[in-house]
Image (cartoon, rainbow, N blue to C red):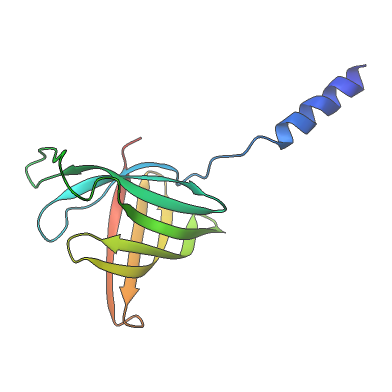
Length: 131
């Protein structure tokens, strides 16, 4: 009986999905206009995606009517192990450009970088975990 109960516990635990450590809400660095946002990173199938959930101006005032709220910022990001993510895309609202992107997680800091034009133009930023 005890062995059967233990087996059921292990079978049940196998069906529980583990959250990726990068999942959560991240505060971006200010863009070229001084604006910043909160991006919610979550699973999209086997990959990670991120959506802008809050926007702020340079003084920290929330811009609840921003047209970018609800827009996809990160997509197709694949976990590579050891806190590294790659092969994704990131959209920069201030430049309206999409970059080939990668991320690296270290504690509550998510280093995000991306390039366009075959790696000729690149940007990087550190996002801080909000929750």
